[in-house]
Image (tube, rainbow, N blue to C red):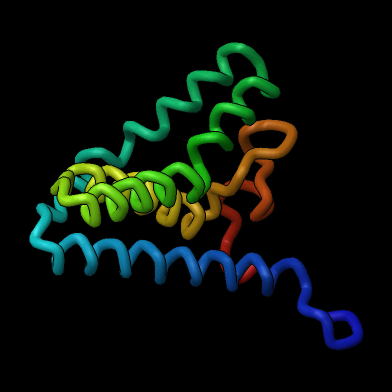
Length: 134
């Protein structure tokens, strides 16, 4: 730490712990809502198809990967579900899709797979999968 400010490693640890908590909360919410928890695992790798963009180069790859690996789209899906529920439509699958997507992002970030920078292995959390204790 420099002059009372946290260093990058402690901030990275906080983000990783935060994402473990998000993943656990999603799992509990899915179970509590009566949905099948195994959908979180069954759909897990679907979101990694965005890495196909790397076939077109690191810039396109990072753009597509980052577009899928953040909480924006799952939040929009969940808000759409809530709005439709208030309008009398029961589309529970929409909430489950949002949960699966957000669960994927949370687990990835907890494991150190952050948003991509110049190439696949450099992320906003540092090098992919770097140890929590480094």
